[in-house]
Length: 359
Image 1: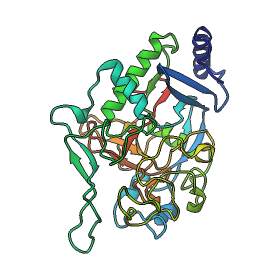
Image 2 (image 1 turned 180 degrees about the vertical axis):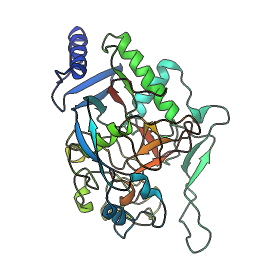
Image 3 (image 1 turned 90 degrees about the vertical axis):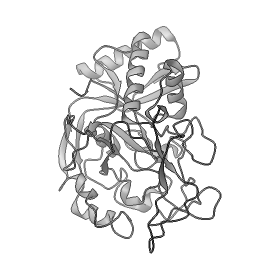
Image 4 (image 1 turned 180 degrees about the horizontal axis):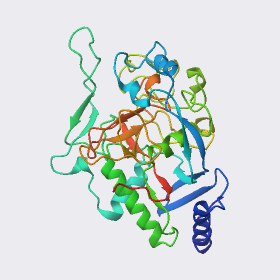
């Protein structure tokens, strides 16, 4: 279903549909809405019905993640962040989720409309980017990492060493930047008469994100398609058999045993229908880390929005193009350094639903 063909019809239809989602007469799973951001720029969201899912991972999944095929770093505590065992979580309301991460083009429209300056672009700002001089970890001598804080980089130039495309997911944006985009989008759609007061655009909660990522599966599988890594070929962008720019070298350590077409970031929804899960969500695993609304609790995710008052660390989910297979599962969760931290591996996905915000 499309909502942008006739403006007068668009307003009536969209408002009717989103209101029904809250008051019981919900649209069908997979119904699509579009927020019109400007000439030739729109943001598509897909309806996800209420339901239940298993949050977290099993001990067996954690062992696979740090094993030969998963390749995640063994001996760390990060797998404990997924919780001791999977637990049943209830999603009591329907909501819409962006089919893809927010793109460079969509974020550019926000900046053009508001003059917004991201955290990385402010005086004293910086963002984590790839150092093209990096050639390897040098694990037998002094360990060197490929990511460094850079004061002159931002979403406009993430230091990819190749041209930035409008259909890439926007990166080098912080939790604060992502929330500013969502607030602008809410106001933009309300002013156009396309959004009722009881719904808003915002970052997804941790429950909404993992539920959407699993695509309607009732089990706690490693990925949205199941437990078998080889079934992920042609479905997601992670560390695989792809040369880094201008060199005959792939990312070291464990990787998927195929080429996914990109050593760095890929265009959103590049893998088409095969890259979409049961809810129609694209790029939920791999691609870029997705910053969400909750603050990080190292003991595991929460059914309701979780916040802290001191030293908040926003949660990010899903893994990224640089990650080994074990770090791009449905259950993986990390905490960012803080609300203003940004990274060329981090982006975000928008949610449309009942207000869920920090007190």
